[in-house]
Length: 363
Image 1: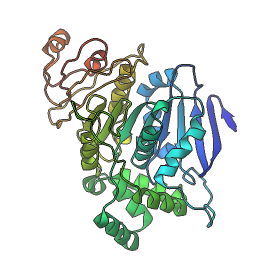
Image 2: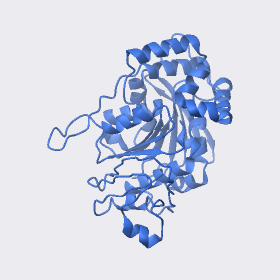
Image 3: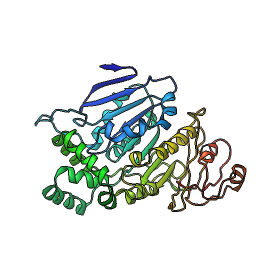
Image 4: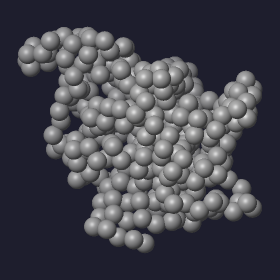
């Protein structure tokens, strides 16, 4: 194991192969570990470095350690996996995580394939997961047409092209040339493409999460995520429809959907400050980070609507409706002298404490 100040990196042996883990900070009693899992074509650096190096993230890192997990063969300078190695399925990758976690509860932070893996892990091991932040999650299996399209894409596109269209929307690919060039270079120069191809194929072969929204007065013991969950997606992301669909299948008293305006396929790269802001309030609402300095999320008049509800283990009955561009909480608005399009997310975490109320927020 290598050590650099509070940075530890090691390969953890699991029944499905070695996964690379990087730990920053020291685990503390009664405190969860932030567990990250990257998307296809990325590793923990290219997926999360912009987010975790942002100055606003330092407050969180002072309170909670972070464990970055990378799927087999996806870390920097990874050697090509042996030809006899059978790449694990998404389900198997989720079952590799208990070997990494050992005795620590987690707050999962995943993107794309990583979000799916963490959600699957939380479904199978709800006692190990305190909360989830899922970016660009697709809870569904690929249909027949998707499978055919993926096959055609494999035949007609290079792997970097396929990964780029998975990560970014058409508009972003056509307009944000510098960002696309940066990630294309990363995929071709930093990642082992043979290994990426196997991970991508595993993701495209995923099964549906098969979650179901509990119905009041009906069956409340349906298969669903039991922990507080924050769903994030940029409004220009190719995953928008999938994330909205995922939200419709989860428990509304424990799930928040935040659709970020003017944001592309990687919100944590495109708008890290806003992602961190939402993350801070999410953690604070769970009863952690109570002493953190909380800044404001400013709304934009061009923001689109997003419906959300926050809930934490210490206050699970309170629902907030978040909608961009307007606010109904006029008392808070008048007190702080804000316009109707500039509201704070502070009310989200504070609403966990005592009463349920409706707040409309823009991001």
